[in-house]
Amino acid sequence: MTPLFSAPSSPLDISHLRSLKLEGIWSVSDINGMLNLCSNTLKELDFFPSLRVPSQRPFVVQTLDFGILLNLNCLIIHTGIHSFRSTSPRENRNLFRIASALRTLPFNTFHPMQLRLTLKVLFHYLKSFQIGVSSLPDWSDFTSVLDDNRMYFANVKIEFQCPKFDRQLGLLDTFRPHLVDIMDKNEVLTKFREEGVLSYEYF
Image 1 (cartoon, rainbow, N blue to C red):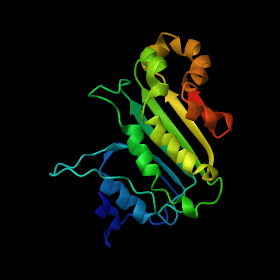
Image 2 (image 1 turned 45 degrees about the vertical axis):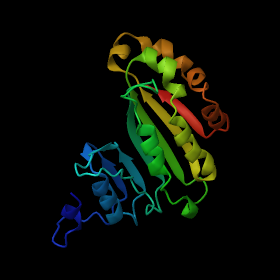
Image 3 (image 1 turned 60 degrees about the vertical axis):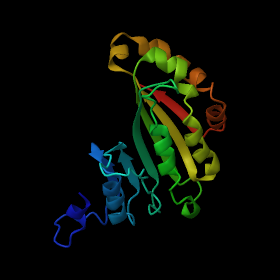
Image 4 (image 1 turned 30 degrees about the vertical axis):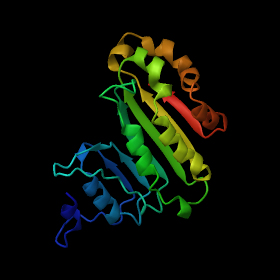
C-alpha cells in the first residue's frame, strides 16, 4: 500500500497531512511507511491496530514505530478485549502491543503536556468485564508507559464500549456508576486517576 503514496508518479501526496485515521487491516510495514511520509506535519493519529500478520517463516514480531512523530499531540487507539482469563488460549494481547508502540514515541523531544491519549476499548460480556477487566496483566505494560513519561501527557482517557446486547437490556445505566470502583481495583490506574491524568467513559 505504501508505494501507492511514495512513488514519484503518485497523484496522492500525504507529506503535509495533519490528521490520519486508519481503519481495517494493515500490515505494520504499511502503517510505518505511511507515518514516515507524513511525519513532519502529522498531529492527530486515529487507528485500529488490526494488523495483518505476515505469512513468512520464521515469524518475526513487528512493532509499530511512532518515533518520527515529533509533532503528534492527539493519539486515539481502538482495541478490543475478548478474554479475562490469563490461562485462556484466547488471551488478548492488544494492550501489550499498544504499550510496545507507545514506548516508541519520541518523548525526549515532546513538550510537557503535549500528548492527549484516548484508548477506546470494545469488550464483550458485561459480567466478565466486571470481574476481570481491572486485573488484566497487560495493564501493567500500559501504565508503565504513562508512569515513565508522566509529564508529556496532557490527559489520558479510556473509553469502554458497551456490548449492543447489554445496551438493549438497559444494563449500561445500572453499571456505569460502578465503573470507577471496578477500575480502582488496579492500584496503578487508581493513582493516575487521583492525579487527574486518567479518566474513564462508558457507552
